[in-house]
Length: 145
Image (cartoon, rainbow, N blue to C red; front, side):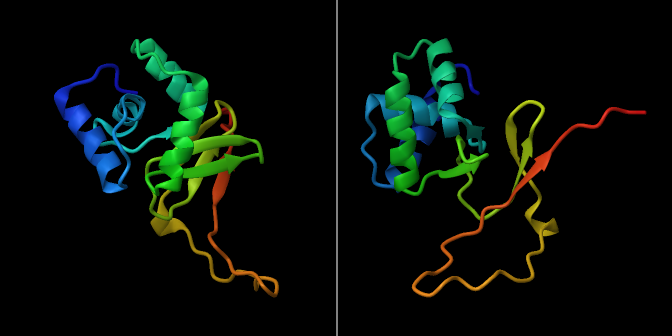
C-alpha cells in the first residue's frame, strides 16, 4: 500500500471517485488514495485497508472502511471476491478476470485471463439468469524435494 499522500495520489483518487459520481468526502479520498492513488490495482481486505490507513495516520474507523468499500462496489469502482464463503477481498480491477488465492498466506492475486478457457456453463434454472462467473484458483506452495 502507498505510504503517503501526494497531490497526484489525491488527484487520482478524486478522479476515480468522480467517474462513479461519488462525492469526494475526506474518508473516501483517504481510502481511494490507498487503493488507486498510484494507479495500480489492488486486492485488499477491509482489515488490511484499515491497517494501511491507520499506519498512515488517517483517522478512519473499521466500520467506515467496510461501508466505504461497499459504496465503492455499489458504484462499480471495485468488485468483491469471496473466498471460503466468509473472507471478502476487494479488487480495484473490475474487468472480468480469474484470481489465484494463495492458501499459505491468504493473499489474492490476479490470474492470467488469456489462459482461462470455460467452454460451457450449466443452464440457469427457470426464472434465473447467470449474472457472473467468479473463478478463484486455490494455490498451495509445494516444498522442493
